[in-house]
Structure formats: structure tokens, C-alpha cells
Image: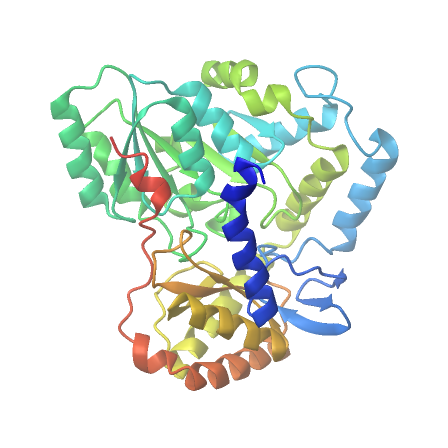
Length: 421
């Protein structure tokens, strides 16, 4: 047995035991998808865990656009964008995205994860300070770690705490840049950032730069789904807007947008994931373009999504679950103990509902949730069915009784504590 095997064996045995006991919920192979419904083995279930918020992944216009691009450019680019993989469709999409989010320029990466890692890593260094929400996505923390900058976490969505941390950092002296990184919509809690409160921190530090990860806000928040900055009419005050295509835009990939064209040119030549990864396939790019076309023509999809989400929130409240007020399509069911969440998810699956638990380190220990997320293509019958099943299981596990006062999750994770200086 090798040292590496010894390190991995206990965890592998834990997974094997979880599978044997019947409560391991992850990596389920989906045989077919229709969007709001999926097939697993020979069973058809209602999907309430997908990030395909606008239901465009199965839209015939999006599928057709991807197929046509596949025929013209092939299945893969054959190289990175830096070398031979740059295509006209990439640059056309970048222009479209910049206009969509209200910035001058945008730069597409192969995934949202590598966008955050590549951009933060190449722009920041040891002389810089990064203020980060404790519930930010793992990709943000990985970018911070790679940059070597001093990372200062603040309480989730708490501009007051961010201000205290900022003033303390300024008192200690900062030789380089100060970057505040937050998300527009937080993927586990479904919270929307209180963006104006954070932008006001510029009064204390005029040189403060703001980086908004709007992966879950793009296509969902703001007028016509143009994002969280547009929602608060403050796009011009946000320095960098990051977004992904794997949520509302029915594809894969990510981008960074800004008004600072020189910074973007620097990123183009220094982002390691951009330079050393194969470019995004043309079919994926075409799917994004087609999704934006549909969104332009059918903004009512966003209204439909909001109406569905509001109905679910009200339904959860009637069951007795604690639900925060939010505009986002992510509505977590607060469970508490990890094992209870595993069993709850398994029973949801057994009753025909596909939703997965989020446990530590995605959320704090002992504050596990079932992450439910909804799509504009869910029908009334889907929502009725999900609410019926959730009510039955919530009563069985006494979720309203034990967690009615829960204020939800604030991600105090190991990845944060390991970064604090």
C-alpha cells in the first residue's frame, strides 16, 4: 500500500459504506433529461436541483444552434484560444456579453471556475488585499489562494463587517490594490447580495475595486435578466462582472467583463486557464448566443421563473419551513444534521423528486440543507407534486418543529480559515 493510498483509503471506505447503507446521494447517472423531469434507471423524477433556471437547455432553437455550429467548426477547437483555438464565434459572443451586462469588453474562458481562478490569480499579488464574503464560491477562494494576496473574509452579506475589516486593513497599511469579491446570488443559500451597501465602502476607500461573481444572477436578476448590477442600477460602479453559461444560459463556460480594456488585455495574455486550456467548443458558444436571443425575445421567461419561485416560497412557508425573502430561484430546505439531510434526500428520490443535500464544507457543520432550485419550465403539476412530497417528509422528520427559527447557513468553511492571515 502506498502513502497516497493510505491517505485516500479512509474516505473511499466511508463512501463505500454510505453506498452500502443506501444514503449516498451523489453522482447519480441520469439516463435522459427533459428539463423539469429526468430519467434515472427506469424511473422518471421531477428535477428540482438543476441550475438551468430558464429551461433553455432543451429549447429547440438552442439545440439547433449548437448542432449547426458543431457541423461548421467540429467537436473541439484543437487548441487554446492563445494558439489555434480562437474562433470568430468566441469574439462575437464576447461583444454580445459585454453589451448584455453593460461593460465595454468581455473575455470568455472555458468554465466559470477557471474564469475566477485565472482572473484573480493573474491580477492580484502578495502586496494586495482581497475582501471576500465567507460564503463565496470555492473558485473564488482558489483564485485568492493562487494569487498570494492577503485574504480578509467578512460575515456573509454583511457590509458593516466588511467595512470594519476594510478599515482595519487600511490602518495596517496596504501597499497594493484592495479588491472586494462577492457573489450576486449565493448558490447554496439563494441570498441576493446587498450590492449598494458594499459599493458604499468606496467612500472609505476610493481606490476599492469591486468584483461581482454573478454566475447565478445572470439571466435571473434585473431587467430582462441582465444581472445583479442591473437589478440595482449600479453597473457603472462595479469594476468587474463575472458570469457563467452553465446556469441560465444553457451551456458551459464563463467570462469576465469590465470597462478597463487594458486590464482585460493583461488577463487575455496572463490568465493561465485561458492560455493553457482548450478553447470553448463552438457548439457551446452557439448555445449561449441562442439563449441570449431567446431571452431577448421572451423576457417573460424571467417573470415566469419569479412567479414559480414565489409560489414555492409561499408553499414552504405554509408547510412551516423557514424561508428567507429573496428574488432568486434557489430555495433551500434547512435540515440541520448531515445524516438527516442524506436520508431526507434519499426519501425525496424514492418519492420521485430529484434534489440533493448540501453538507459541510458547502455549508457549516450541522446546518445541512436540501438545495432546491426551480426553472421557468416547471409546470403547476410539478410544483404541486414537489410541495406534497416535501410536506410529507418535513412532517416525518419534524423539520418545521426543530428548525423553524433557523436563519439559514453562513459558510464558515475550512477553505476560509485556511486563508485568513
